[in-house]
Amino acid sequence: MRLAIRESLLAFRRAPLLGLLSITTIAFSLFAFGLFGLVAVNLQAALRDVEDRVEIRVFLADGTSEDAVATLLGDASAFPEVAQAGFVSPDSGLARARQELPEFKDVLDVAVLPASIEVRLKDGFRDPAQVKEVASRLESYPAVDEVRYGEEWVEKLYKIRTIAAVAGSGLGLVFALVAIIIIGSTIRMAVLARAREIEIMRLVGATNWFVRSPYLIDGLVKGLLGGAVALLLTWIASNIISRNLVTTTFFEPWQVGAGLAAGALIGFCGSAVSVGRHLKQVWREEG
Amino acid sequence: MAGIVRLTKVTKEYPRSGVALRNVSCEVDKGEFVFLTGPSGSGKSTLLKLLSFVERPTDGEVKISGYSSVTIKSRDIPMLRRRLGIVFQDFRLLPDRTIEANVAFALEVTGVPTANIGPRVARLLTQVGLASKATSLPHELSGGELQRVAIARALANDPFVLLADEPTGNLDERATRGVFQLLRDINASGTAVIMATHDLSLIEWSGLRYIELDHGSLVYDGTDASRFTADGRRR
Image (cartoon, rainbow over all chains, first blue to last red; front, side, top):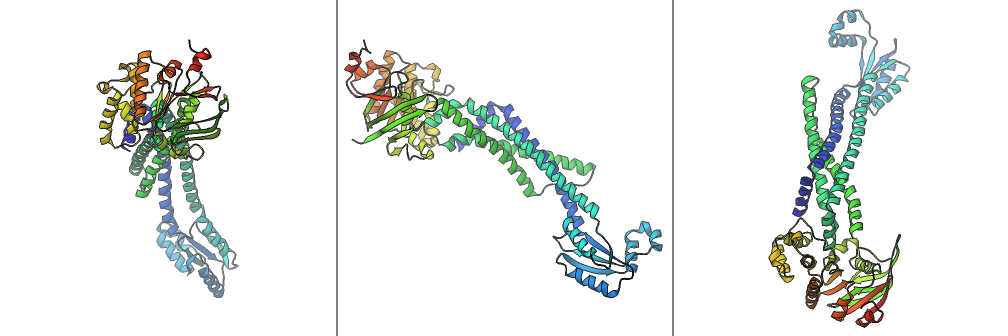
């Protein structure tokens, strides 16, 4: 193992520029991934906050009988998604509105609100699809005049998060592919430059793993370094955004670990793909 | 005596260049010295490649000390090669490493503990008569000396068979005799030697067993060197 590490260091010293190029591409690939990841993580936090407050407001038709209200309340409470359903009389609804929206006090003083039922959903049943589902089920009751649940902006937030995740993954994937190709070609050059050593290693009975390991370690280390640089860049970006725009949260420790692991994986894969092919080539020509 | 190397009806065919060896059977015993001769393209190098398991036969079986070309697993090939010494006409040394580093290389890459490498290299270089050149670089040595280094490297892991592909092909008469004598000494200590050569006078002079190939077929296996004079190949 020590020899393998020594040999991989030697490879880096022989082509430092190529090595730096590999690290930089991996770093950019993961940086693209990291930036969009940051957006996704922060949106996710915002969404969780919003989801906690998701509620369905069921406005009742004028003149709905108390029996009908009781039936609706009973049914709604029995839905598996529903945590709690409560009746809000027109008066208490207005009182709450005045309290929550003091700037509209003038309007609300003379307004009339219909009676409504406030439905809160259980944790895990608060994403747009499920909210919509429950809302439409409630809408089918004759006593119901209108159902509101802030659908537009909940859906919008979800959409933005999905776009961020998809764009980040797509861009990151493209960069990762580029990184794998660049690493592959640096490994190719390293293998060809050391064709004679490799040939002799094989002849005297070095194992396949032994011949390969310096290149694999090389790729792994470059990948890890690339991942670390990407994390640093993302962290700087996150700080800049926090200072100038909105407060952002950075990745959790496990996400940082995953970033480093992804870098290592990219480096390792780039090497592994290339080294096998080129070793065979060297061996065929010289053997 | 036990045949340490055995070829049974071995045929090797390449997709592009056709048949390189045709139905070759022979056996080399433990501690034997055998020449392999024949004109260029007769299949000598192919045979050596089969013996070092760089290539596998298209048909038939190559067996070396219990390893069979039919059943060997890829991961066992390095283990077999550690017990084979291989020497080439062009020496195949690493030009940017000293003589002792070249020999040590074979030990390092096969996982010999570092502490054992130094003394072992010194002993090997003494054995081939190059102890005084340990710190020289390959370009400072003569052809004969370079081949001795290559032989020292081939001996590093105590092989039971030494395969030599035209080891004297690039050497003058004097160096040829020196290298040949070294191979004989190694052979005397129990290592079987299979040496491919064009040098019929060497075969004749040594009086040792030789296997002759022609167009991929085995045409002679014995010690009668008078054939060379009889069919006019030697003046």
